[in-house]
Amino acid sequence: MAFEKLSQSVQFNYVNEGKYGKNGKTREYKNVKFDAGADQLLTVGGALSNLMGDELGKATLITKHAIKKD
Image 1 (cartoon, rainbow, N blue to C red):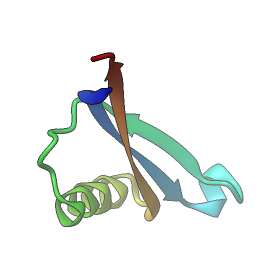
Image 2: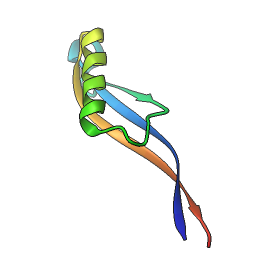
Image 3: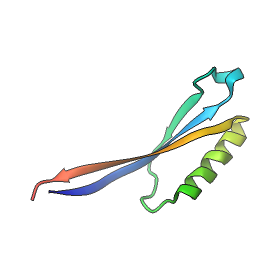
């Protein structure tokens, strides 16, 4: 059996207790390139959070794979 990459997305958690409460707000952005680095993703997440007037809480990379039978 082998894995085949299908898609990749990133999920950012934005923190602003005044706007979102304790848990913050989570947004998922699709079509992330497979060669995107952690530092690049954090830069994008930080820039988006600054535009919204929030702080970046955490970032999660989500990769979907298909399992191929041999």
